[in-house]
Image (cartoon, rainbow, N blue to C red; front, side, top):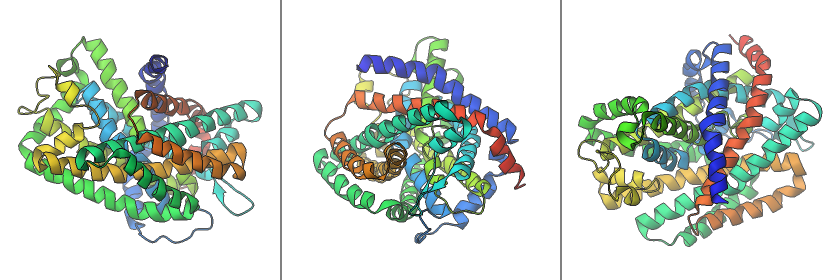
Length: 457
């Protein structure tokens, strides 16, 4: 089964995923006349202007900052630390360049997703807001086709994020803490289940209250640590940027093989891990943006763009610079490419811990990354559970929510027991399958997005 899923993932990531992500991003970049350039400043100003650690209640929804904090909580997870490390390890430092390209285009894509999520959201009889791709997919396509595509998306996101994705996150938490502190990962699993269970039961308001506090704090801690490392390795930073741009187009020089095959690996790793990191085009974060109580859809669209910028161009980039400047520069263990047994020692899970350990010392570097990854992955579990829950409600109604939450907690615990390549591959597969119906709907509804943008020039 692992082999079959790996072949499906290779096809999706090398061809379909890259094509769809680039096509949708280019389409909206052109249709909106580079909205990600024209309105990024306004989006960042809105995010930091509305920053609050006590947002309060918002009538079945969230404040704009709570929504973007929940979206960033979902985006800034293992994709930033483990995912970017895996992309570098497999595709070379140049994979980060392709992550940047995907993110730049993805900012236009996520503007469209957030705008449409606002325009098509609904309120239930209790006054709770529900929104996301299933609602704009059925707006784009009436009848059986719309129901099929929405159902396909809902099932894919429940499996990708609600179950397998949370296993990936909890596995990363358990393994890094066990490496750093020697605490058995199953104990971490029990702690996670208890904390997550308390937050899940509290619903949207409790989750929003947690993410609005957790996201700024966890980002500040990680960014401070990364800046310290880069200051200590300042003489290697110029060479680090040179490697990112050089190996984006000459990856065979560092990962081996022929130019064509190496370039395909670098681009596909950048696209696949870029998607897993910023989630633009995947259809996950629109669920959070749909809940925002804002004056108009455009307002949340530009906030959503700022979320992708923070995720990729700040957090992920700093992590990548730390890894490359410590491990790939002249005195690093991967300076000459992948030779000998170094690949067996440095895998995607501990690459970041090794990198921070170069400056902080092996023990403290390992602990620092473990603590950061705990917060990142924990916040992602919270966000992903909410997104899956919204789709459970869409498919099965409110009575299915409690059974889903209990099942999700079991998956979270199981993720800490053992590393399983099949779980990672299944998570990747369903993540990528979500893109297909979401992208089709985005193409079909571009008129609604452009109209919303023109109304708020």
